Length: 316
Image: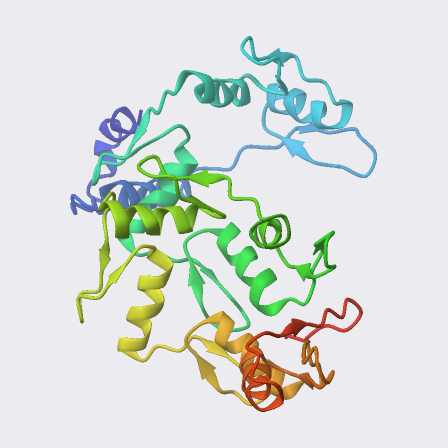
C-alpha cells in the first residue's frame, strides 16, 4: 500500500526530500507522509456523537457508527473460532490472526514477522535505538509506553496492590508475587526435559539448560567476555563497565546502577526495619545487617523477615 501511495507522489519529489537510507526507509517514509499530510486541507468533522458528555466528532458516518458502539456495547462481529465479539471488522481481523498464526507485517532488517503493524513499529526501535518514552523522575528512556509505566510503578511508586496470602508480604506486580509464592508452597512447575530436575521459575530452568545441558545461547559481554543467561543481567553488567548509574536517590542525589540498589539505599533514609533476629527480636534495615548480627548472636545462619503491611518504604 505504501509503495502505491509513494508512486503517486512524484509531483512532490522536488518539494519534499526522499530519504534513501535502506535501514530506516520505513521511518523516513512515515515522516514524509506526515509532512505531505500537513499541506492538505483538513476535512470538516461533521458527524458528531450525540451521547451525553462525549461530544466527539468524526469525518465519516461510518466512523461515527463504529464509535457509537463504545456507548451501546454492541459487538456485531464474532470470531468463528472462539466466539469472542468485536465492535469493528478490523478488530476481528487482527484477532483472527491469533488462531491462524498469520504474521503479515515483516521487519525488512531482521525478517522477524508480526501480526499487527503497531507491533512492527515498536520492534523497529530495536534497530533504530529510538526510545521516545522518557521518565520524568530519573531521565531513563524506553522504547514502549508500557515499559515506562512498569518502570514508574516498580521504581518510583510505593503502591503494592498484590499481597501474599501465606505471609502477607506486599508486591508491586503480579509477576513478582507469582515468583514469591513457591517459597511457601514448594511448587516447582518447570521441569527439565533432559533430567529429573525441577525449578520454581522459567528463568532458573533456562539457566540450568545452559549450564548443565549446553542448550540455548549464552549472552556474552563484549568487554570482558563474561557469560550471562538473561539479557537483563548482561545489560546491568555492561552498565558497571561503562559507569552508567541512571537511578538517582531523591533524598541525597546519590546514583546507582540498578533499581534494587536504589531501593536498598533508600532504607538508609527511612526508619523502616523489615528484618529481625528470631532469637533476640532486634530489628534491622537490610538482610546483610541481620546476617552479620547472627554470627555474634548465636552463630546460626538463619533469619526471619518481619512483614509490616501498614508501614512501607517511601520511594519517590
